[in-house]
Image (cartoon, rainbow, N blue to C red):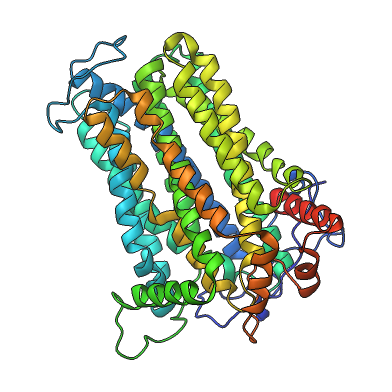
Amino acid sequence: MPCQIDSIDQSARPPTSSDHTGEPSTALEESSTSSQACRQPIFCHWPQYGSHLEARGWAYDAVGRSLSFIGNAAFVGTAVVQLARIDAGCEPEDVKCSGRTQYAGIRPSSLLALYNVIVGLASSALLPLLGAIVDHTSVRRLIGRISAIIYCATLFPMIFLSESTWLAVAILLIISAFVGWIHSGMSFAYLPEMSDDKEVLERLNTSFAVVQYGTDVVYIIVVVAIAAAMGWVDDSLATSRVAQSINFVATTTVWVYAWWGGLMGRRAAMSPFPEGDSLLTVGFKRLYKTCVRIYKNHRALASFYPAIAFSESATQALLVIGQTYSIELLQFSSAETGIFLLILLIFSSIGCYLSPLSLHLLSPIQSNQLCLFFLGLFTAGAAGFVKDAGQKVLFYVFAIFWGACGGWKYTIERYLTCTIIPKGQDAELMGLYLFSGQVLTWLPPLVFAAMNEAGVSIRISMLSLLLFWFIAIVCLQCMGSYDKVIREANDGTDEARTESPNCERDDVVREEELGNEESKIDAADRVCEICQR
């Protein structure tokens, strides 16, 4: 039988002004198997949240976010680019079309990249503001509800995508991505407050990952199956309409239940505004002070965070640029783009097991560098060998490699972050880690779009990603040896210890990380745990 998540005592949570009433303090149902750690197969974590209302609400919200990302990016995005090509006068088989859209005046192949530039700039600039809203106001649930309404309102018109509406739908994609990013910020603010028990919180995180991953896989398979059954595999417009109809109905349903069904509770302000600060300034001031303190006291982290910024921006851009590459050179349809994303998803989950294998031979820093090297190598290989529509299968093969490296990268970076952050500063520096992964997401798409608009071959433009991975590798090299970084983290430890729910550490583990063979095996085992979660 599937495992249930252990029960949680909600009375251990920080006081809130939640409007849940009449619920027992036991958040999750007891299970006869709860004494056994359910950690091996991923399906063993299929969620059964019992009376934990917010966990159930978060899971339903995650379903909507997963559907919307795949629906908008894979299916609608591909159809919009193809309609933009028609608007620019490009022939279906023309892989070197230099035409420009009549209204926007840009090449169709720049459309998805510019879309990500706009969203990336807006999200990076407003991330500290969202943090201030979560910390210092009581409107978290209200913003979650308002953003859900606006987001679902943008999904409905996309169902009617056509040659005459593609530009309006492209604008709606930008609006929905930005609003969806705000909505995700409000949702993720609930996550660390669901339990004070790290073990339970980790199991909740695992179950939410199962929900999101399962939603993505099922949604893609259903849409592609419908397209195949109806003979629409090569008809991106029909496929996108079916996909967006499912997306709109399902997302609206689950979000209404999550946010208006009594699941997501109201929150009071966690702390008052510091004297002299306002909502618009407090987040940016806090970010600046954190960065200055890291530069002065933790030089290894001062190199690590830029490495995250450059590597994550290029890795995220790879999805967008790879999708553009497949549409322009290989004439991918929406259904084929869905298959491309499905391959990435499946092999990213498999690829995370490369991290523990690499730690038997390499330090975590070297493992991260090797992973980025392979990402660049496979990207260069795709640009060099995949040239026309007759090589779609070869492009899928490169998608396997990209997915595997993506899973490896995510796992090793999370492990490295958890082990090098000084104790007592976990929450603050994990927040900076998340910000670093977002702050430059606009730059690689901007470089790609600029090169593309200048008439540079899309194959060469794709190689611009290698520069960002190379900079990240250099930054990782500037950190020094892993042993030295660990010692620096121990020397810079604050007396007050605040453990992050995402990072398991203790003094014994700190000592074991210093380089002998047993520590490498132990480190590999811990990365396996991160991968399974």
